[in-house]
Structures are given as C-alpha cells and as structure tokens.
Image (tube, rainbow, N blue to C red):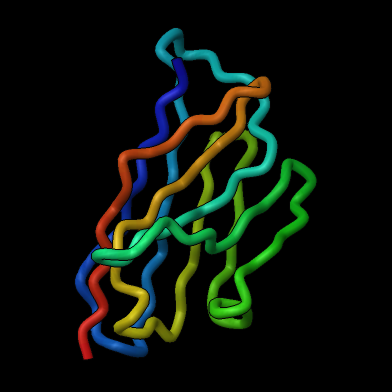
Length: 118
C-alpha cells in the first residue's frame, strides 16, 4: 500500500504563508511512479474542494481562487509534493489533503489542518 502523509499545516494570520508537504511511501519501501498529484481542501461544513494539481511532467493547474498566490511543486526523486500558499485568507481555513495516483490507483493523505485567522 502507498501511504501519503501531509505536514506543514498551522495557525497563521491572514496574509501569511504556509508550505505544505506530502510524503509518499510504500509499505515495502518501494513506490511506483506518481502521476497527477492534486491537493484538495475541505473547509468546516463544506464539501471537498480541488485546489491545484501537478503532473509527472511538471504541468500545473490551479483553482481560480488561488491562482497567483499558491504554487504547487513536486520532487519525483524524494516522492514528495508541495503546496506553497501565500497571502492566505480566513476563508481558506480547512483541512488540506494531498492525493496521488500510483500505478493507476488513487491514494489520499490524512490531511493537515490550516487555520487562517483575521
């Protein structure tokens, strides 16, 4: 099985920045190639929202609400994904999840809490 673990969530003031990380690992110590690696978030009482994604080739896409402020990246050697979030807004408070597709199978992390205070 592939395990994804997010980290970097914290309490920040509005306008602040956070860098989230997603570490992928396999129970056997071996993990296949990760294809598209999106980030999602879920605000309290809201449904899951797609935030950004990055392919193996480095192509990126962002939700309109975060364009220009968030930057998604990945390290294919370390099997890690990153989400740099700048100029955070209070409404962006929520649990942030990374997702990865490995050999055609989808995996989700447990999420990391991001709280943005006004």
